[in-house]
Length: 640
Image (cartoon, rainbow, N blue to C red; front, top):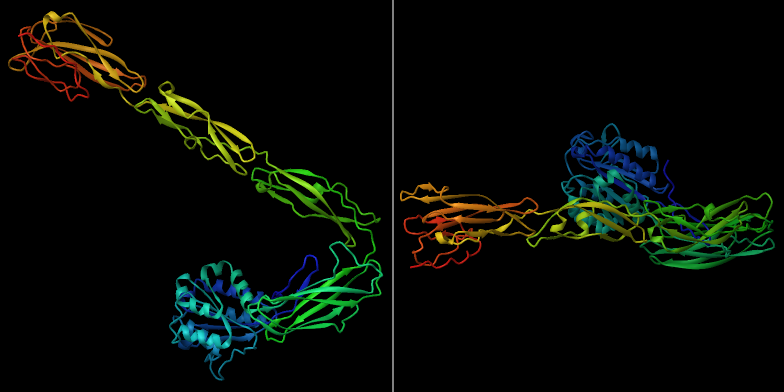
């Protein structure tokens, strides 16, 4: 069954209105080429859905193009599947008879020939006919043209401009349903006729936007509402002899209409001669009128109604009908009693109440009357926290009499944030310090409403914190609720000691013994220095080394090496220095001195660690201890 289109304007205070049915002519142009095979079934379903949503006395036609199986090669040209019809079965059968097996895209031609009613062929379900020439049978009602295709519509010998001219002459509105890539080709046709383009894939999923656009553009409707001057819950005294109605009318369309008239057309006591000629009504214009009608005799508790109709002499304009029902007083209204409450949001930030939550014993004084309860608001969210909503509880009895009271509803959020942490590792810098931000340990904390602040119990670290440290993340929401959770911050020191120095001169003379050299190093935290081994040797003229471990006496104590007996002139003493910080990072270096002849002359430099090549006495090869990081200690000047 086709749905009835209800073009109505309701009035909360004045009453409910209804509208008479509009009429429109709609012609579908559907591409039956082979490329539509995957879409044709969905198109059929949704075309029938559009048909069912149109006003019940509308006429709908169907034109196909591009099909090989309909009329052979002629099937590729536009051909009528059914002229305009108001018979659902006829239209449905025509839709189901469509196929997708051709190859010619003649969309503009189909639009042109439909608007000019010059289509040369028709498919009768079995074979193609062209004599007599088919006619779509336009009724003179507003006309909508709907083209459904998946390829360019320009292959039929007609241009977009010709289609625009034909649609303009017919006074029709063009709607195109096609892939968005074709919009540029057909946008002007839609714009110039007041229509719109829709994506084919979205249409296959949901035809409702097309339905809404067609009804808005092609159905002209007037609006009318009627009120009897009684506030909600009030009734008309049983001794009344007349009633005055306030009539508000309008023309929400984009077209002006002529010959507008409002008449009293029906009522409990029949129609009357009351009417008012409005005349012309421009686009989107509105107005009001007053009608006083006789009533009675009235019986206590009865209900009666009066109907008003707004009509126009402009073709295709729907009539609007407003009917107002009035209650005659009989029973006592119910007594509404309210109480104030608090509502608490859940973990999703929502809360709901029912009328009974704020009802405080409402009742009806008339024996045997039942009451129903309703409230002005039942759902609450985070935006309501702290706001005192004054809700109306309406109590209605069996006779429709009602009364209301107001309750104060306070929305409360007591749900604490959900705190999620993540562990993190931070590296100490060269200065022995590290820091973190809240985001480093926040693993996605959330709240049912909103988060006001995040804080951590500790954000800076030093060498004293090396290893795992527990840091507390505290999250406070916008409503003062807070929660905390711990994250593990691992403080790491990966920087090895630097500037490891033996602090020894390049040369000593035998008489300098005993002499001690204390090694030093620099670290971002601290370093323990240990001399691990040493050796004594002499370099022969052929460059080989001769051990002097028996003649030189060296003592090692932690970071200090003491030369008790230097052995002989030309002896080399070397030792290994290891500097290790508390995290196990270590740097190894070497100390070196040469026992020189007391009579040698010249400046000697420190044989420290990493200060480059050291000078040697004659007969000894140069010794290179590597590129230094700082200058060595000055040596002492030898004797001449």
